Amino acid sequence: MPLRLIFMGTPDFSVPTLLELVAHGHEIVAVYTRAPKPGGRRGLQLQPTPVEEAARKLGVPVLTPKSLKTEEALEQFRAFDADAAVVVAYGMILPQAILDAPRLGCYNLHASLLPRWRGAAPINRAIMADDAESGVMVMKMDVGLDTGDVAMAERLAITDNMTAADLHDRLSRLGADLMVRAMAALGRGGLQLKKQSEDGVTYAAKIDKAEARIDWSKPARTVLRHIHGLSPFPGAWAELAGVSENARVKILRCELAKGSGAPGEVLDDQLTIACGEGAIRIIELQREGKARMQAVDFLRGVPMKAGAKFT
Image 1: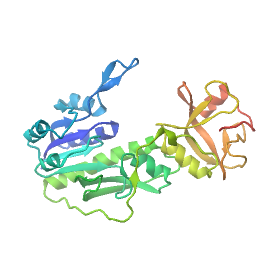
Image 2 (image 1 turned 60 degrees about the vertical axis):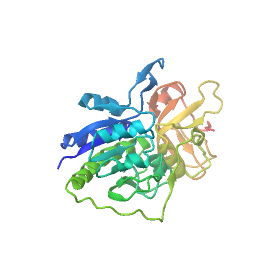
Image 3 (image 1 turned 120 degrees about the vertical axis):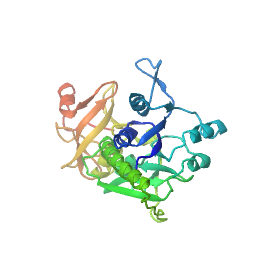
Image 4 (image 1 turned 45 degrees about the vertical axis):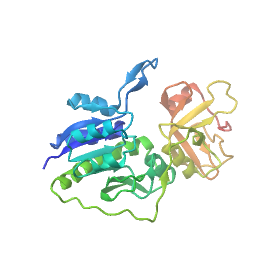
C-alpha cells in the first residue's frame, strides 16, 4: 500500500530514490534538504540542492531548517502525519524526537555493507581500502552513527577501473530500487529487521584534502585505488618536476601497467608512471586551472618523455 512519506536528502545521490518513490505511488508530503548555498560564476547566487530542484519540479513542499532540535521543528515535522521518513544523504543528525515522530519510523539508505564503513565517505573509503565489493543497505535509524537495524541490502563488485564517481552512480540507482522495495514491504507489514554485527565495524572518515597527494612509493594497485577513490573530488594529485607554472596535476583515471623504475618516473611517452612496485598508466587528468582531459590530449600540448618525473 502507498505510504505517506517525508523525504530527507541533499546531493545528487539522493535524487533517484525520491523519484522512484514518487513513481511507485508513495505520497511525499514534504522534502527536507539543506539550505541553498552561494554559487554560480561569481558565487553570488544561491544554489538549491539537487534534491530541492527535483522536489520543486514534483510540486512537493520543501523545508530547509538549520536545526531539527527545536520544538518548532519537531511540531512542524509531526504535523505532516507521515507513516515513515526516508533519509538519503541528508547531512544533518536526526534527534530521537524526530526519529520517533513517524508512525513506522525513519529509514536510511547507506552506501556501504554495514557495519563496514559507517560514516561520511563510505564510497571513497571502500575503493581506497581495496575492498572487493560495496553495496547499499536500508536500515531503521537510531541515534547512533549508522548503527540501526538493517532491513535489506544489495551488493556490487568494485573493479579496478571504477572511480568514486562510477561507484556513486551505480549505488545511487541500486539504492533507489532497494528503498522502493523496502517501503513496499513496510507498507504491507512485512519488513524484517536484523541487528548489525559487532564484528567488522569500520568508520569512513570524511575525506581530508591533505590525503590527496599521491605517494608514488606505494605499490601500483594501492596508487590506482587511491586515485580512483578520490576521483573526481577532491582529486588525487602530483606535481610535474621542472615545470614552473601549473605544475600540479590531478589524476582522475588510470590503469595498471607493466614497467618499473624510480617512484614517480615517467617510463614512456604514454604517461606510464613507475610506482614502488609496478606502474600505472594515466588515462584522464586535469592540470591546475584547466578542464579535465584525456591523457592523449594532454600529451599533444605537453609532450612527456621517459625520464620525466612526477613528485
